[in-house]
Each structure stands twice: as C-alpha cells, then as structure tokens.
Image: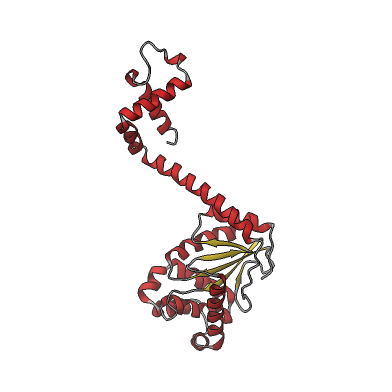
Length: 266
C-alpha cells in the first residue's frame, strides 16, 4: 500500500507519453527531465494526484501518522532530557503498588476512572507491566473530574479496599476501567456491586470509604497534581519523565527505556 502512491504517480508520468518529451526513450530519461515532467503534469492536471490520494487514502493516513509519531517522539525525547534535570516529588506512602515494590522504574498515574483517555492509557500500562514484569511498578493517584460523582466515589472505594487487600484493590481498578460505561451509567450501585464480588468485608468497607485515610489520600493527590501543574488526565510520571495523555505503546516504551537510565526514588 505504501508504495502505491509512488507507483501511481510514476504510472501517470508514463501513461500516454504525458511526461516524456517527444521522441524521448523511457530508458534514457534523466532525473531532471523526469522531475520537470512531474511538475508539469501536476500543474496542468492536479486532479490526477488527488485521484491517486483518494484511491490510497489508508496508505496516505498511515504515512501521515508515522510522520506525526516520529515528530512527537523527537519532541518528547527533548522534553524528557529536560525532565531528568528537575526532580519531582509526590507522596506515595499508604498507597497500593502494582508490581514489584523495588522496581527500577516507578510509574505514577494521575487518573480518573470515568475518563475515556485514562481507560485507553490503562490498557497500554497493563501491556507494559506484562512486558516488563520485573522492572516497572504502578501507583495510582486520584484526580477525578468530580469528587462526588462516579469517578470520585470509585477512587474512595479503591483506597478503602486497599486497606483490606491491595490485590483486590487492583482487581477493582481493572473492573472500573473495563466497565467504565457501567460506572458512568449506574454510579455507586455499580461500584458497590463490584466490591461485593471481591468478597470483601462490606461493613468495614462502607466505614472506611468515609474514613480519615481516604480523605487524606484524596487531598494529597489533588495537592500533588496542583504542585506538578497537572491540567488533565491521564498524566504519568515515569521516574522523573512526564507523560501526558494516552500515548501509543511505542512512545510509552521510549519513556521507559530512557527512565531505565534515570532511576528516581520518590
């Protein structure tokens, strides 16, 4: 597909002698002659190239996306080189950690269970945790759009569940993102139903959800987000490197590779 555009243009150059001057042999045409011929045809018949682009729209979009990703990669790498010079401290005590606690790469996510882009990013993070099982861990910091809405309530339950069982808290985390539409539609009833499926002490949970620790962690996460200048979710710290938004896996991997050489203790 990617070669079709070039082949199509070349074909246009040769069809009916459109590009070849009279009595010119195709085998002896020079690069300069060919270039001039291409320019002449495109000036006289721009509809020809437009027709090729329409017929190969998927290839065009693919090439454009590759160019966009390459440009974004270069911009991110330049940003990350500056990031390593600026230590960023956030509070992680008392929060569950997914992955080995002594992992070299510490990923911190400021996120919202109701955010579409956060859901997308969570899938990428899951892939990376599976790809680098001994090198990465994840800590989830809460930045719900509405603390009293489904996202804020789900965050409170996540923190409270972790007080009983950290593994079950991460199960809850995965279910919230996997069923984000149910969370948005049904709110707290869906959250409680999910918690019950995890075989938790529901009386303790309902007490802990309204407890001091949940409020403290939620407040600390908001304060840390403000200190870092977080303006939207998802927002990640990969050691000291800042990753904004739901990056494609290949760009996220670039951050991980750079972070390997820049260990940070939060």
